[in-house]
Image 1 (cartoon, rainbow, N blue to C red):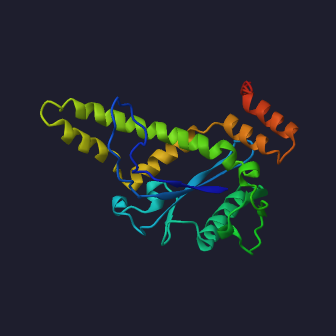
Image 2 (image 1 turned 180 degrees about the horizontal axis):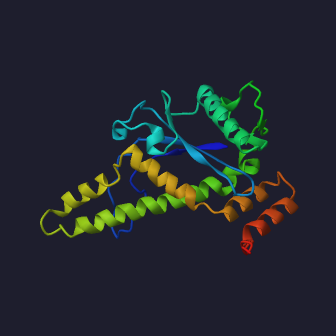
Image 3 (image 1 turned 180 degrees about the vertical axis):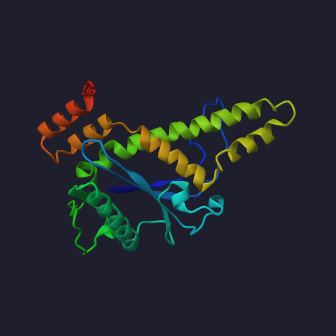
Length: 238
């Protein structure tokens, strides 16, 4: 498990222009997203979102369960020990229902809890080894954010195309202002994008990232890769 910041309203920092481009104010709307997978890419835990608002206005009268998201809040929108303990209880219940015992690799100080869990064993990585041993930091989060950027950019391009059709009716400066506003989406839209992006992270990506850390022996990853490639036909019905 690991966490990453998601500045979902930030305007793209790159552009194509033959002249200088004015700078833009950095928008600070942010979510913290926690990602968790097993080493074989066959089980991606639903994303955990952390924001600052207890009941975001865009949720309306719906609960997070009705919206199909795993959202909670904290004063600064960061992971806390209390939130992690709640999530760990949910994760342990999920593993118990599947009759699975798992090892959860971690490296964040808010995740240090003293409770014992029947189906989850926590193991904390040594200090300053995150980039080398944490599978999420070995490329899983990078792949996830790459997919997320594509989804977000496609949304903006589609909206911008429709907006440019109005360029004759309004000034170019007005179009530029409206274009920037396209990035100002609700926290719910941002979480929907993230869920779509998470579903696009492939098993092969997860296996490759985990194997690069060297935490488990290579033969296990080779077996996992071969199993992912297999297509088992159903048995004929007599």
